[in-house]
Length: 199
Image: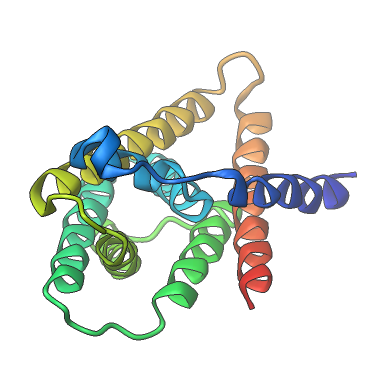
């Protein structure tokens, strides 16, 4: 049954992606436009929550170092985009990040904190670049602050989920560990659906 549940959930979530729209800076302001940008992209949401969940799975200093690496490197990618620097394969790298983070969670991989931070940072560069490419008429600083805050909140949500699952409250640690892996599998499946849907 689980083999059917994961792809089905991925298809349902991926199908909702086109329904999302971005805020117009003229109507909502640059900050809200930036804040909404990660929230209205299924690929961004899944990765950013997954980063927090994976950080909680690793534990210790990873709880803040891994998400901070993502936000910091994402900001660097954003600067590259608004500076007009070319970065190839942005969309495939973003889809790959969804799959990779999902698989890391599904396999319960616990890398050293530094390596984990570098890995998510490499993916974050492309996410930040994508944000910069879609800045439109928004102000660079306020738009950037908006999506950085939204990203941090999504990381926090993932960390919260990971900490609750890690404690095993209500369902026991064994079942919580299985649920965490299932969530990782769903994330990876969503990444595959998005990638093939964009192909």
